[in-house]
Image 1 (cartoon, rainbow, N blue to C red):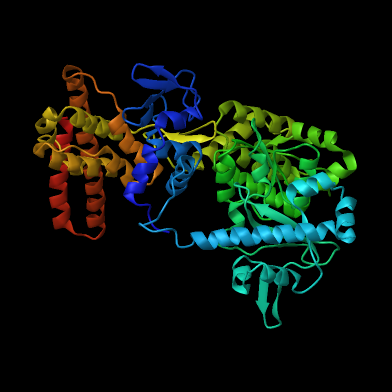
Image 2: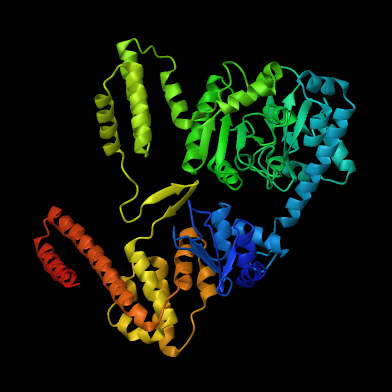
Length: 590
């Protein structure tokens, strides 16, 4: 799939007014020419989000988030650039073409949606006329209302019943194969699903994209899913999500393993449950969930495989910035079986008693250990210390350290000391100038000083071209360390002397990465005062850019000198050292 043409992107932006789009997520109030509201990307207490209808840009003075309409949708819905464009295109009723032509797979995808829908209807009708299949579902506690709602069906115990039906509907074997509905082998061509309860899998738009099939007995494999197709990727879809997102006040989502777990909980009124299609949670699953809520409950089976999947799932969801709790189902049970035997009220108690992820990890660390045994105790303490060491909140560190001390009899000072040693060994991925915060599940960066200074300089030049000579006689575009600002500086350097304007939309549409879109948007969204007001700001910004540029050159030179010394290249080392001294003098003068 190619890039969406520039004229289509501009049309999408034109037809999606930024005030209208952001108003769907944030209550905005008009103040002067702009609108203000509470920023959805951090714990905003006041209206720090500013939206400019004239510039079609937003900017938060609190967390630094910025962008155009596309950038806002990318950030608020956790979409990549293409998905944000497609979302806005659909919102505006715009037919999107790629590289000047229709998506070459579009017609085939539509064909697959139709053939899957026809198969779902066929399976559904089979179920209604099969006493064996219906009685199986009734025996599992599934009623007719939920059968109808989820479109459950039955695949006949025949080799080619579906193939014959679809051929009569005008579909070819090739189309059935592309939809994953038949199998080709040395034995011939036959239905993929035979003698199984069928679970249609829907995407978030309610289109049938695949199927899951369960046997009526204990034969293997118990469950069989459609193989991946042009419209179905197992790791990118969640069963039941199309129903869950219809909830107007969705506070959280419960993730279970199986189809039966999901539909049984829906039957009992829990309309916020999805299933991970019997597969491990993926990064794509976490992104999908984050579009609709930041609060996730995991409720996997209580067997070893289910608990291992829970621990893996926690890591995936936590890394996406989601708030995760774990529902513990009593040993040997799955949600479906538990609700059937104990009722929905008892399951709701399990939800209420769900464990925070730290408590769950500690619970898992204790399993199989007798802490009265000194060897088990040492192992347990070390494992829990590893868990505590990853906590960032000092209050929580103290809390869990005290609990561990009380439980094991190990001195609190010893535990705290071990935690501190562990924490010093954990390498931080971010330096002091680029602190990453996780607020309400959204990660944003405090803007480094050099990046902010570069943005100020460019914003000043765009508003007051008269400062052109002052800037470019002092610094060069290559001294801008931020890639997008270096490119924009080169554009400014070329166009201002000619009296040509800088095309804001060209630069906003040029980049597809969230961070780059934010960087560019800041330049065009900064409000700059009068020429008298900005004189000091400009001088300070130029000094900052010069200082950071020189520091980078100095660090690079030091690395080169060290390399020369290792290679015993004395002559080159001396030359580099002289250059280093000159740069250091230049830095000292700033």
